[in-house]
Length: 416
Image (cartoon, rainbow, N blue to C red; front, side, top):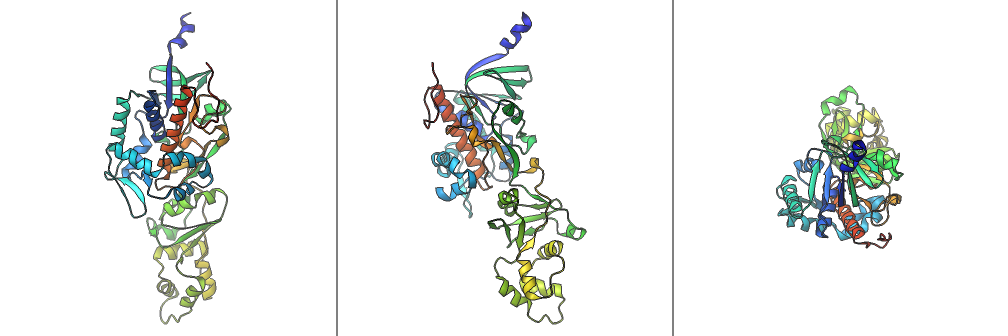
């Protein structure tokens, strides 16, 4: 009899459960608390919001000072899905929210918005204090490993536990930076439950390159004033030549096109058309070496010259042919760096698996938010704002479910 009763003793009943204590999960908990439902928030790491804190070490890019249409268009294929959530909680609301937590903000020259403190820890401390005041309970080292019927199962320091919640928000992150919590381990129990998942793919990730020996002296060199082209995407941006390959914002911007299988070319002369470049190369070079003539005529940095040699070999003697090649150098790479090194991931819970309230069709009363959803975004404030916006929507939907209501009218209220 004792053995049969043990699972009962390990089962806890709550109104609202939030699994995952990153920005999306904490925003869901805040939204539930504002609706009068203090949630139980659990996370499998020893402390909460680890990836959020790491992102803030070099300056927390909270959002972007940008018109709504331009902001949402950055989400490409996911823009129409996220648009209503971002309309309700976009850049202006994200700024007001952070300022409401006592964090003054500023916008840089590119429109990126940062806390004046330039880190995440003061904001997180204020946020956690506000959640505690609202009655939100936090538990760490609780790892979700699926469901027993209606109850969520967890491995905890005290042994296996079950939580039976009237509404649940899943906000367990993507599949990168496992040491900070986003290890994607939740995909196994969700797949077992018949929930549609898209495979994780790197997003905002560097490209692997197996360099020739002559490139070693250029490791760490920033590439500026160049453009990358992949498929229909042309991006003018910086990247860094590293021992591991190519890294930086310019590379991240073409990531979706690379994932789609498009070849990449590098335009070393984005401010010159091919004819002008050819005319400069056709000038007499006098006693200059050909390399010096190329460098001076076209103002090419040593690292740019090295990349041209690496991927194009000796340039043609014909000025027109050389100019054309310098404007479309084939980038030979070996794909993305490993998934765990990516800043974020595409893939996760598919749109088809959810209704408009972010509720799982296969598990009524369970909602999803944040990077575990199958949307993608560039860096620059887009990732964090969408995590907050989807967390808010999931929290609203969970509160409405508890009240036998709906947010968008797309799911039927509970009975009873």
